Length: 420
Image (cartoon, rainbow, N blue to C red; front, side, top):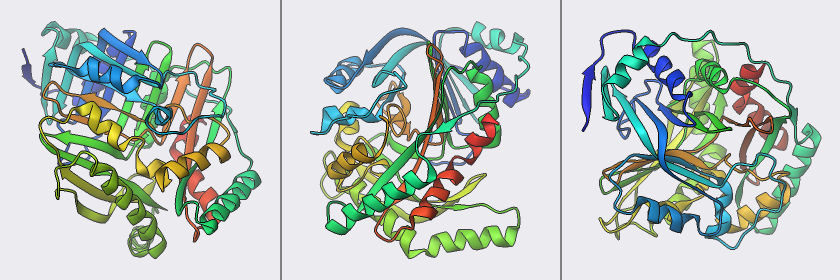
C-alpha cells in the first residue's frame, strides 16, 4: 500500500541520502528529472532498490522473456535495453568487439520503490521505516574522480569515416545516419556514485539516471526521452540539432535562434520525426499519429537542443513489450532508412554500442512506462575496470565532417570535465 509523506526538510539532501542507501544493495535504479518541467513525467525522482525477481537476457528471445516477465504485472519494473537488441528485431548483426560485457536486457521487480513529486514523498513498497533509515544516513564525502581515457578514433580517422558515410548517402544507400565514437579507459577503479553526483552537478538533465546491477553501472545525464506511455497515449521526443551555450546572454540567444532557423538542423530533425512516425504506426490506432511539436528549442547547461514531440494512441490490448519492439532502437540513434543505417553503423563504428544508445527506464503497475535514450552517459564494469562513454551525431550529405567531430566533443564536454 502506498504511503505519502509531506517532506519539509532539505529535499536534495534527502535524495542524495536515498541514493547512497540504494547503492548498498546489489541492484538499484534512480531516475532524476533535476526539476525540469515536463508534462509527461509521472514524478520528479524515482528510486527502486533490491531485486525480488529479475531477468537477464541477451538478444535472441529477449522480448519474449520481457513479455512473460510483465504478464499480469502489478509492480514497478525498472531496467534497461541495450542497443544490440536490434539483432533480435531485424536481420542485422553486431560484428564489432564488445568491450563492456553488459547483458543486452536487464529488468527487476524491486523490494522498495520511492517516488518524489514536488515535496511529496511516496513510498510504494517496503515499510515506513525506510524513510527513517534514509534520514539517519550521514552523507559520505565525495572523492575526486580523475580518469585518463583515450579515444577509439583519432580525429583524422573520424573525419575520414564521415566522408565515407557521405559516400553512402551520395549513392542513395541512406539519407541520414547516426555515427558514434567511443572514449574508454581500462583497469579503472572508482566510486560510481561519486561519479554520478559529479556528472549530475555539471550537467543536470531531465532524464538523468543511475543504475546498478552488481558490478555493472550506468551513469547518465541524458536529455532525451525515447518513449513514454501514459494511459493510451505514446510520446516520443527525438533530439536532432545541437549548438553550444554561451555565458553572454545575447550570444546565447543568437545561438538558439540560429539552431531554430537552421535548414540543415531542421532537415535532420524532420527525417527522424518521419522515421518515428513510421515506427509508431506499427502499434498506433489508425489515424492517431501526430506531431505535437516540431523543432522545439530546449536549453540545457552546455547545449541548446532541437526536440520534436511525436504522439499516438494505442489499443488497451497492445502490450508494453510489443510497443517497445515496434520502435526499438530509436530513430534518433540509428538513421534512415533504419535497417540499412544500422548495417552501415556496424561497418564504420569500431565497437559494439552495447548499452549506449539503448534505453533505461521503468514499467509501472498501471501499464505505463517511461524510457530515456542512453546518451551523455558513462558505462562502468567494475569487475573488469572498463569505463566507456560515447558521443555521436547525425551524418547527412550537407554535413561538414570537421564540424561533426567538434559536435561530438561538445556533447561530451560535461563527461570530459567530470573525469578530469
